[in-house]
Length: 198
Ligand SMILES: Cc1cc2nc3c(=O)[nH]c(=O)nc-3n(C[C@H](O)[C@H](O)[C@H](O)COP(=O)(O)O)c2cc1C
Image (cartoon, rainbow, N blue to C red; front, top):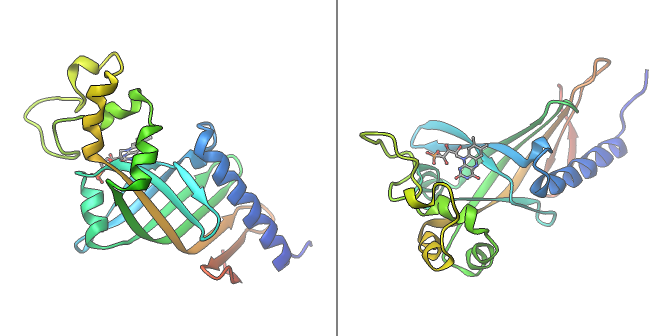
């Protein structure tokens, strides 16, 4: 039986970070999406978001959101959150505890907004707050832009609702499933490795 060493764990970690980075632009990589769980007072809420950027040092990831959405209110109230990625083909799970930093109308949001295609900008032009109850169906994008991109000048109004959330990873839990012995370990923010029982 082949034993797993700490140097194997470093290789797994490096490979997974490379795949996370690939997931930013590669929509067929399952890491393009992840689950984000936040605290709403004493209740936990989770939802799917899109991975937009990965930094290696410190290890951190980013997603975009509507500033008016409940998740942002929750993260501003309590910065602690948990993220979850799963690649079903490779049987890899990544779970992490994070601290969130919400960027709104600053250099970072401006730079990212300037590079956001018109097609995506309309998601931030809805007249309703995300998750708000509605009397009747509404897609929450201006109806005139349902089938086309907004004019650039008009799209700028979406910037008022645009936010970029930076998630600093405090502890990463990596699980690789194998029929002949799962591999599981954690890495803390000092990159200290520790085997965990799968
Ligand atoms: C595939 C997929 C990708 C999504 N990506 C995002 C995203 O990047 N940012 C976001 O705010 N919401 C995204 N959503 C919508 C959220 O899952 C959620 O429904 C919405 O943001 C409201 O969340 P909240 O009420 O918890 O704030 C996505 C949903 C799906 C199904």
